[in-house]
Amino acid sequence: MGLKISPNLLAYLAKGRTVILVSGTNGKTTTTAMVAAGWGGEVTTNSTGANMPAGHVAAMAASRGVRVVLEVDEAWLPEVVQSVHPAIVVLLNLSRDQLDRANEVRQMAERWRACLGDADSRVVIANANDPLVVYAASAAENVRWCDVPTLWLADARSCPKCTKALVHQSSAWHCACGFAKPLDDTTILREELFVDGVAVPLELSIPGRFNEANAALAITALKEVGVSPIDAAHRLKDLHGVAGRFTLRKWEGRRLQLLLAKNPSGFEALLSTIADDASDIWVAINARIADGRDPSWLYDVPFERLRGHRVWCLGDRRLDLATRLEYADVDFEVVDDIDVLPVAPEPVLLLANYTAFSEWLTRSSLC
Image 1: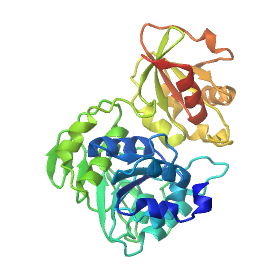
Image 2: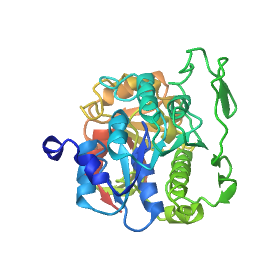
Image 3: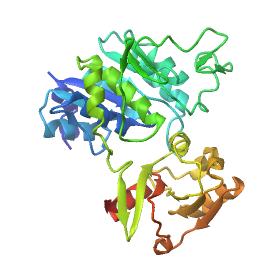
Image 4: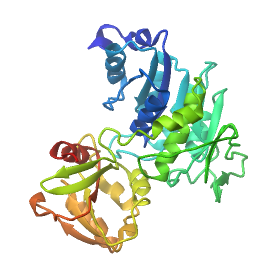
């Protein structure tokens, strides 16, 4: 309502405040929480995940703190950048998402590139391993390139500049036209995290190499607003969960760890963290408005990695999931009644997309 009455309300609320924006297909909520935690003290943020202008207005109207970090839906990034004139823009990744209505991912890269190409004094913190992010960010005048683990590159196999095939070799990539991975001049994350050549201890309480990547981008952004990387990294140790993600929960005598994955890229990242054992895995898939109505993305998820596990198929589209697992030669059970789910001595992993995740978050409670 506020934006209808005052279309410039977002710009008004941002005046006199140091604003960091975080955008990308995956990892926005977690990286935003990391920036807020690493900054320390009072930080205004849209912690509920409302990542469009109405959510940004609500967050900034609720708190007049001068330090602000906002998660931004990737499609809305150009408009929000134009409105709030952020000090920092963090670009995580670009991949397919919500196939029934989202822009083709290369169109998104073009829109990002256009909004970052003005003469604003902002600093862009960008993932150097994602060619689409590099293409978008290279239009900006002031970029800090971050060499971070990036498992999913299936949407960036051809050059966004000339469309020729990109050549991927080890941790580098290039095209015959000259477009190539930039030098990592501020952050390198391989066996250790370095910021401007200085080693930074990184001990996270939440799992996965992808969260190490999120942390590296967050810490690099905070350095640009005067926060010591070592201090920021130390504060991140106390971040144990983000909006229910990664938390240990209980439901009807069962314990589970709740994980969100909403597209092939997100699922690949989570599957890479699963132990090579015979444990049960629960996977819940819906296809409602917030999820995207088209579940065909399941065929791009490398579910073959779950061979040796038994997967319990949950959610509205459990039969679609079961069919995909059949093709992947993965043992599965289709669950029509969740009360038949087994009780195990150890917590079970539950991977769920948006609305399924919300259902299980509401159904369960923290241990």
